[in-house]
Image (cartoon, rainbow, N blue to C red; front, side):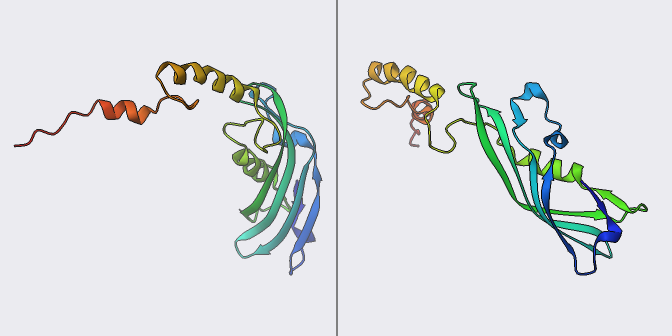
Length: 162
């Protein structure tokens, strides 16, 4: 998204629109791809330090669940975009790298297909089914696996009174 500095009035400029999803440059084999255009609502202005922009970004993504490996839709919203770019010697500034970075940083690190609560991840169901025999074998009535902290607590030796 290129901005012409001479088109920004003294009181600032509000821009809303869409950019092609290809600006994200997401690798196809990474489990994330843009399912639509990148939408933006930005306020721009010029000051002594250069160009500033604030606003928000939206993009619909198709992510792969880390549990079940199924693809699912995820509407990404970056509500607090804020950037400052030094005034270049040219008349235009390209905001694309900065906006791309904000979106990539907002991607979930471990995406789950049950993020919205509208479905139950098949991978979560499988994990619960695998944990049930463990609970039965150690006499526990619930389906949770034994606590790692409880196991570590068993390793403590009683303090020697002196």
